[in-house]
Length: 454
Image 1 (cartoon, rainbow, N blue to C red):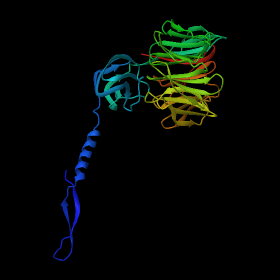
Image 2 (cartoon, one colour; image 1 turned 180 degrees about the vertical axis):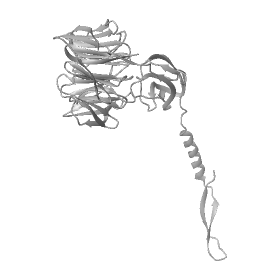
Image 3 (cartoon, rainbow, N blue to C red; image 1 turned 90 degrees about the vertical axis):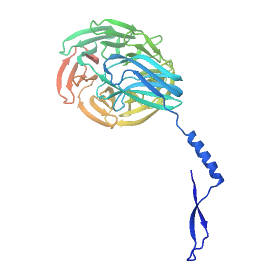
Image 4 (cartoon, helix red, strand yellow; image 1 turned 120 degrees about the horizontal axis):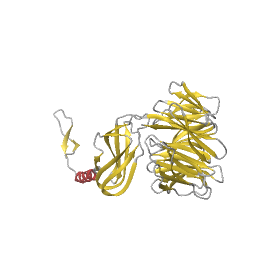
């Protein structure tokens, strides 16, 4: 390396003037500068990223869903690996299924596990990738491994309608695609909530007085397993299905999860004795619950570690929660709620324990939320159905009704909306918004659930 400096030299020209000349000058401090520069460059050299070898699934392997998929990866790093997450995403990096995560403290990791994949949700288009995130001493690095995912030919297989024939009684009717009717189950207890499992032909229901959680198979309406909430206050408050897991909450201030098919207990959360959970949602790392304080009207968001059920974070909430949905990329939560006379939605970040990107929906109060695709949600607001685009903050009126909408569901195979009233269900095409069918129901309707199969 050669340094130059401009030195003034008094030199007589023939014309009697003076001139500048460029001379090579070496100063002692330049040697020190060179040494410092060389040292700094070496110090700033980046650590090589981890090497990730995906053994299974193979590159561009075609997977017919739903299926159990073998994940076999080997990861090597010069620095210690702390965390690895595998998720399945589309071209927009939107998460298709619940990610899986592992924690380590080593430089060499081998993962060889089977994971259950459901069906590709409505509105998530190819190409698809297995997205691997590695966090450790070498920093955060992501890798994309292209695969082919294919849904089977799905079919609409009918509608569950839960009714209240009498006090402390619940009766579930099932309507075939041609709307032929049969009694599916008669249960003692007041209806609280119900859901179906993704393409597993299971129907779940929770009741109070007495409090009980039921899991039925569809074909013969056989009771496969059931649970009873613990004393005192043995009452269930909510029910949620997510990735082969059933989550339930009780007035005792506790959230539990069960394997959807076997009923085996997976997680028991830390108990909050002074609060009642009303809504619950889960990602691969966390369970988020909305709790109401027993001695006041204040609400609280409580985040639990999914692996242990212990409390990770808490934060107060100044509005009522209508529903909690998973965010577009699989790790954040969307909080739909009501404040004063308007609805709103915001993104809860579990790592920072804050809510951001809050948007008001100036149409009324939300009563029910149904996911349409990664960015859009159907909303029941004051007995009208809207399609809300969270990314754009745009709310589109689909149809308004003159009587109370008890419940509604979107059926993606035929793109129809089922709208339930006190003693009937109406079926509308979407987006044409035409009335296709009207079905009278024998008793007061409490809820409806769509059955999809293949």
